[in-house]
Image (cartoon, rainbow, N blue to C red):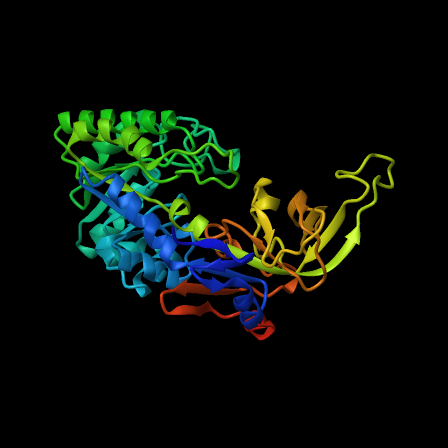
Length: 426
């Protein structure tokens, strides 16, 4: 298995010493395993091999150009959630016919660009978006390929911030509203309905909501066909969970395929999936350097007991919520370990960043080997929603990114400088 493992106690990425990368590239630094991304993409592709399908890599998970280029060489198509992601996909070598454009708030300029390119599909989210696309297509004398995003009102069972299939969320349209939209689209010559789309959320670890979503879309597709509309595909989105913790609920790829294929097979339509996190999440780590270690008092000034034990410490590192916002945003858990562990009794620690927010905690109440200033820590499973969600809060520069491939390691994104940040200011 490719990826991250220990060799004589030292953390390595595909036989390359992570400590050496950190010394030469500096920290914070995101490190990716090209081999592990390739393994995971191939495994997902094999799981659905018995049925016609396309895998559209979701750029929202990680849109660093070299990562997107790698996925294209592996055989992926692209799923874009903004005009910016469309342009990254094009620069990575995808053709317009390989790009699906989805998202709630597509602007007028984004829709105009998408129509001019002739993308594979534009997933529409509302009747108003249908009207705008129809007007743009008629102005250009073209016909636009669209799919309707359904909201099947199904609970993905994941964190509320990343559950998108309930009726109360902003995503898609109800089945009743979709039926009206389909009839309206059918009477507009400038629009061609080619598919149905649903994405009910991320970090889905149970088969049941996925199977219910597939069933709902398949039944709707059969109804549409009975009304004389011939579709090409069903797009069931992504959202397959990865195990951030050993006991996290996840599905095997066989179980994933078994949840989707029976319903889709009844339609005879091509299956489209939009994997992101599952491919790239475990293939990345964030490496940070310890800049301070300070004792944590057993009680707060208010008299309330503080979390942790009297001998716990704050381990302050040079990476924070500006480099990995998931813990602050979702209370997400990432494994944290020393790149080069020291011998000795474990220490109870809160691993925190330098940002001026109490929420800037990468991991609370962790058991770690003894640490000293200058040691390096690896935060695991950050290949998805790590670098792509970075910010410049506190005027902190965006971290460097590195890819490890058969040739060794190389920088794929240089560390941002203050001049880079100030270039936007007027």
